[in-house]
Length: 285
Image 1 (cartoon, rainbow, N blue to C red):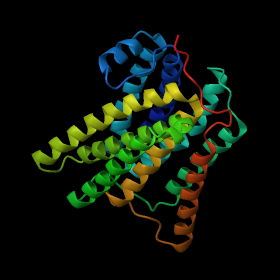
Image 2 (cartoon, helix red, strand yellow):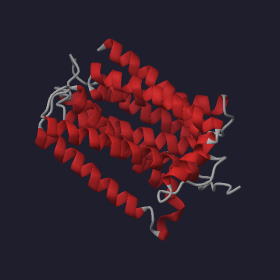
Image 3 (cartoon, helix red, strand yellow):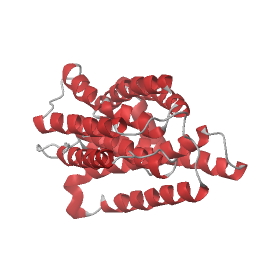
Image 4 (cartoon, helix red, strand yellow):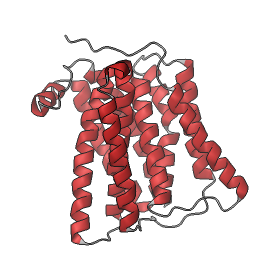
């Protein structure tokens, strides 16, 4: 399990750097269009920044899957979320992006909240990959309905100014859907039909998440979009670890109170992340 946690820390750094590379590349390409996926893909592939980010993201994903196979999903995602502060450091020091004070506070608050949640979990042993069919079906089904609602909401004219934020939240939910399915697959249990469904869910949600993430990166700033995607994806998968895979909560009243406070910190960080400067518009050139 210690190796899995170390891999999660490496995956956090790789994922944040990859997302920043992709954000830089997205600003140099035409907006993606879901009705023209191949054309959008060709446009993105012409950007060296985006290509480098995509390659690093793929490597980070493999490291993430390895971490999930060795450690409980709640711990893995908490470690990934704890690396959120590196996002601001990399963005400001390497890419010269402006990071607002409230965004620094949001990233620290979200990372600390999920770190507190991990610290208050009881001692865990093994990968904790066991699950019930009813449990995973209910959780994943609920996420699908929530994602569908957000996908419809972001098209509303009155929410046009929040398009980037909604797309980031949607991408985070889709990444969480794929992550829960991947965790179930790492357990090596289940009937062949269930395994096929989980693989299909992973591929479908993973593909849609990549498209939505690019659309979010093209619609908003690096910190707010990448940070929101990470917070939503990590927090949702931590909840999935508890509800689907049986990761235990703290056995003491104090521990439960701290865990409630941790989730409140995460929710507050998500509200603070959007920039006060308003949505960034992609230069069509």
